Length: 156
Figure (cartoon, rainbow, N blue to C red):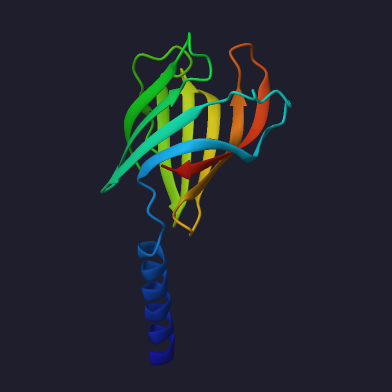
């Protein structure tokens, strides 16, 4: 019985230590074409996206700027808890809700919805090098066409 308690305590301690050793995910992340692709093979050569993420306690403050088309700059900003709760997003035509969940050390899930319908599901992996983040997911265009993607970002 004592051995079992020690084993359980040690496992819990290692789990907490692993979580605490998670890569720092806060910062400005800038898209790079290296290792990036869209399943539709139409990733624009001039694709330009910067993400700013600030983690504080159990909350993410997120903002992004997509300036691929200099005449139509896309912006997205929201604040959401890290527990998967769906919260409203304002001033967006494509999405009006978002949920964020921290899935483990260096892992994040962001789901964007339009009236409860999933439009984009993204899974972020922050690499141990502290300077690389990969975002994978599936998104649905305004025309209703879906695509899978992998986009690589470097810390600015």
